[in-house]
Amino acid sequence: MRRHAIIATILAVLAVPAIGLLSAQDMPKLPADITLPRAADSPGPVVFSHQTHTAVQAKVDCTVCHPKLAPIVKTKATRRDPITHAKMEKGLSCGSCHNGKAAHGFEDCSSCHKG
Image (tube, rainbow, N blue to C red):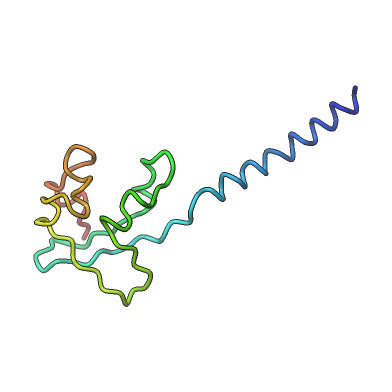
């Protein structure tokens, strides 16, 4: 009986790190923060954080935004079109969520534009 208890304890101790490794593998490595291209009339740079935006999701799901709202850009040499308020007002790019309902709106410039 005591032998079974010892084996069960050893298995339980070994299982905890294994479970942690499995959950870490489920979590994709998120890209570094991205400074978005500025439109001519932009009041300042906008830095997009994947970490901040995925923190509200129960499980990280890249397809919420990619590729429909934002193309995945793998190199800095690839040109991105600036995100404008006109596009956001039509529900494109950031405006699909940042509409004042799903997430904060874009009336307060300082909530996105820094510097």
